[in-house]
Image (cartoon, rainbow, N blue to C red; front, side, top):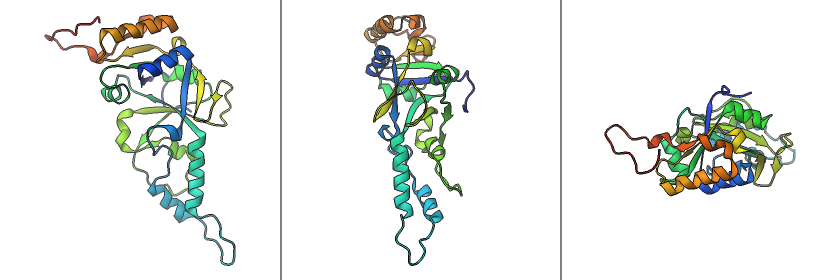
Length: 243
């Protein structure tokens, strides 16, 4: 079940090369969790590891050595990280200056925008989950994949992330499953509502994005524009590029 209303806006910030791959291939890349930038994705934390140790059964005297809590946790969490695939989006009604800088640098890149309703309808059987930004705490029960798949450290709370979580056994015939990620059919002209061009880009980049849209996603042409962050305050000269 989704954690968001269907009208919630979603953004994804990307370099121009990734945007061109999306346009030309009409595929969405869904990365394996242990290949994402944060090494703590789905990783067991010291707090959770201590909880696993406290809940581990003791091997009775005279019996052979059984798997330790640490060994079992390493096996389970390693398996989860290798078999979980995540599509990351930003759930905000407006653009994010921080995400422009993190994913696109200070000059070039685009932000594609859709809604929860559109994306979930496209995925079919995978809902968008809201990421929790918090220090892990003892739960008093056995940890599950759902517990760790939507938890990130507070350092990342500026992302306001919504994620679609796939497993290697997710029953979706559209998934093209590979070792390091899934490819999912994704026609930008059908799924996206708009494309924003980096607020710091120059006219050559602006025109290049428009040419790419004309070639690969023509119906989107009227919904491509500069980032709203590019707007100038009153009494300041406008930037020397078209609006």
